[in-house]
Structures are given as C-alpha cells and as structure tokens.
Amino acid sequence: MTARINRDMKPAAADGRPGWRRVSLVTAIVVIQLSAAAYFCLKILAEVFLVEIPFIPWEVQEQLEILASVGLLLGLASTLALLGQTWRRMGRLAEQVQAASGQFQTLMERQFDDWGLTATEAHVALMVIKGFSNAEIAGFRGTTESTIKSQITSIFRKSGLTSRHQLVTSLVEDLVAAVPLEPEAGERDPRTGPAAGDA
Image (cartoon, rainbow, N blue to C red):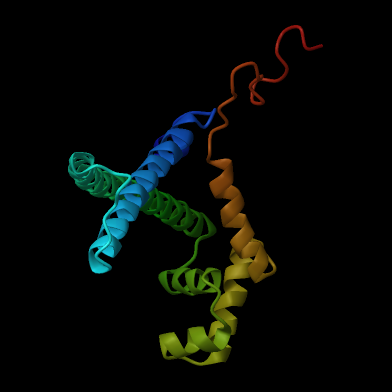
C-alpha cells in the first residue's frame, strides 16, 4: 500500500513540462475567449450607437462572427475538459488520503495491541491523539475526569511514554519508518551502506 501511495504522489515529470502545457492551454483559452468577447462587445456597441465599422468589410465581419462563435465553443469545451481533469485529480488525492488514513489506523491498532491496551484505553488513547482534553474525553465517554486521568496514566505506564506529545510522535515516527526509501538514480541505498568506490 505504501508503494502505491508513493507512486501516485510522484509528479508526472520532473522537469515540469506537463505544468507548462497546462498553462499554455489555459492561456490560449483565455486569449480566444477575450478576443471573441471583445469582438462581440464592439459589434454590440456599434449596433447600439448605429455606427458602422468601416475598417472591417461586411464579409470579413461575418467570418469573424463565425470564428468568434467557434472560439467560444472551443473555450467552453476546453474549460469542461480542464474541470474533468481537476475532478479526476481530486478523486485520486481523496483515494491517497483514504489509503494513508487506513494505513495509519492499522499501524495505530497494531501499536495499541503491542502495548497491551484494553479496548477502553485504546479509545482514550485515540482521543488523546486527536487532541481532546481530559474534560472533553470525559464528556464524550460519560465518565469523570479523574477516571480519564487514571486511564491515561495506565496508557503511559504500558507504553513507556510520559506525555501526550510522545504518544503522538511515537506513532508518527513508526509511520514514517514504514515508508520505504527508494534511492534516485545515482544515489546509494542508505540501507546497504556506501556503494563501491565511495570509500
């Protein structure tokens, strides 16, 4: 699962060319739409004030209207295509977040089992990780704050930790440690030590 997340989160190309293509496409769309809008505005103003456009022959005006209409349609189609790409990207990001959340939950449950926490202590530990205070946890669980303090003390004793901060960082460190290190081209693998010839 971790390899899949890493693969999905890598950019399409390291040199950024896909980004420049998208910028160029958006720029072309904006230019086309602005040109078409400017022409139609000029034509509307000329008709409102009963002013002819002497520097543009009638035949050319008809051709410009056709081109402007086609440009607007192309701009609309391109905008819809970009929106579709955005929605698909958002969907992929949502899948990545969901996968990462599932991985963190699995790691957290395994860690709680290793510590020997009861179901109640595991639930309290989860709420501590989420940042709730003792009073808030007591309110959610319908118990007293002193009971929550006692349960948190038991969690610290079983886990060997001494603070809420350590409880959170211990899980984050385990999650980061589970991410495999993939050396780039020309780099040595830190898991195997220095490559031949580095000494």
